[in-house]
Amino acid sequence: MKERLKAVLKRLLPYGEDLMEQTVKSGVWVGVMNVTERGLELSLLVIVASLLSPRAFGIMGIALLTLASLKNFSELGIQAALIQAEEDDVDHELNTAWTMETARGIVIGSVLFLGAPFIASLFTEPAAENVVRVIAFSPVIVGLRNPAVVYFHKSLDFHKEFVYRVSGASAYFLVTVGWALFDPSVYALIFGYLAGDLTRFVVSYLAHDFRPWPEFDLDLAKQRLGFGKWITGNSILYFLYSKGDDAFVGWALMASALGFYQLAYRLSNAPATEITHTISSVTFSAYSKVQSNVEKLRSGYLQTLRMTTLLSFPAAIGIVAVAPAFIRAFFTPAWQPMVPVMQLLALYGLMRSMGATMGPVWKAIGRPDYITKLSALRVVLLAILIYPATMRYGIEGTAGLILGVYIFPMMPIDIYLIARSVQTSPLRILREVSYPLLASVGMGAVVMYVDWNLDLGAPVAEFLLLVVVGAVAYAAFATVLMFSFDWKVKQNLESMVEAIA
Image (cartoon, rainbow, N blue to C red; front, side):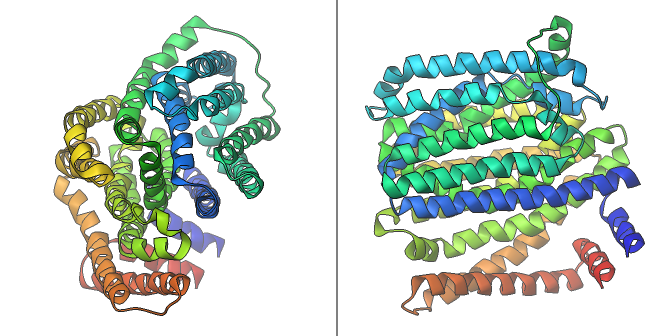
C-alpha cells in the first residue's frame, strides 16, 4: 500500500520524492487546519450574529480595519523573505527578525491607543474609541511571539502550524461565545480576538525550542528587506484593495452597513478562500525549492490550479445558489439585506481563488513585484469608481465593483503573466478552469431551481437539502465532463481511487 501511494503522489506532484511526501503530508495538515479554523469561525459568526446587532459587528469592524491598516502599511516582509531563502537554517537571523517585529508591534499598539479618539471621530462612531484602545494590545502580543514560527512554513512542519493556529481559533471561539451569552455586546468580539492572540503567543514558545533575544544585525536586515520591500508594497496595496472598500463603507454609510458588508464577505469567501490557502500555504515553500526548474514549476502550477478550482469553484457557485436559504435558516430577519451582497462577493471569491494560485509562483521565482504592480492597478481603478458605485447602489454597488474590476481587467492580465512565468499558453490556463466552471454553473442552476420550487416549512431542513442536491449535481456534471473531455483531473482522481482500493 505504501508503494502504491507513493506512485500516486509522484503522478500528482512534480517534486522529488522526499519533498513530494513532505508536501503531501503538509497539505493534509493545512487542509484539516483550515477546515477546523474556518468551521470554528463560521460557527462563531452564526451563533453570535443571533445575539449581537449588525452595529456591534460594524464597531468591531472599525477596530479591525484600523489595526489592519497599520499592520499592512508597516509590513516588513521578513517572514516571507526567510521562507523564500534557499538555506534551510535561518536561526542566526531570528533574533534580528524578532527585534524588528517587536518594535513594530509596540509602535502600532501605541498609535492605536493614542489615536483612538481620532479614529472614532473619523467614522462618526463614539463607541469605537474604547474598542480601538483594547485592540491596541493585539499587535504587541503578536510582535513578541516566537520568530521560529517561520519554520512551520519553511520546513513544511504544518502539524505544528495546526496546533499554533487552531489553538488560537478555539480560544477565540470559546471566549467570544461565552462572553456573548452573558454580555451580548461588541466586547465579546474584542476580548475573544485578544484571547486568540494570547493563546497563539503561548503556543509559539511551546511548539519550538528557539528562544529569542534582542539583537539587531544591520546587514541581515538590509538583505531580507531587499526582498521584503516588494512584500511591503504589496501588503499596503492589498489592504487598499481588499479593505479599502470596508473603510469606505464604514466612512460613507454607517456602522451597521459595515457590519452587513464585512459579515457577507466572511461568509461568502470562507470556503473558496480556505481551499486556496490550504494549497497556496504549501505550494509557496514547495515552489521555492524548485524555482530554477521551469518544467517542474509549470507542472506543479497546473496541477495546483486544477485541484484548487475543482473544489473552490463549486463552493463559490454553491454559496450564490443557497445564500437566501442560508440566511433564512440561521439568521434573524434583520440580516436579510446581506443576501445580494453575499452572492456578489461569492463570485468574487471564485475569481480570487483562481488568482491566489499565482502569487506563490511569483514569490518563489523572485518576482513579487508582479503582485505589487497588479495590486497598484486594482487600487487605482477602485479609487476612481468606488464613490459613485457605493453612493448610488449602497453596499451592493461596492460588492459589484469589487467583482467587476477583478473580472476585467485584472484576471486577463493575471492569466497572461502566470502563463509567461511558467512558460505555457493562456489558453492552457483557461482550458484547465473551464471544466470546473461549467460543472459549477450547472450545479448552481439545479440548486436554484429546487430552491424556487421547495417549501418544506422548515428553513434548516430546506438548506441542508439544497446542500445535498448541490453536491450530487456537481458530482454528476463533473463526472460527465471527465469522461467526455480531456480534463486531466480525471487521471489524478483515478490514481487516488486505485491506490485506496
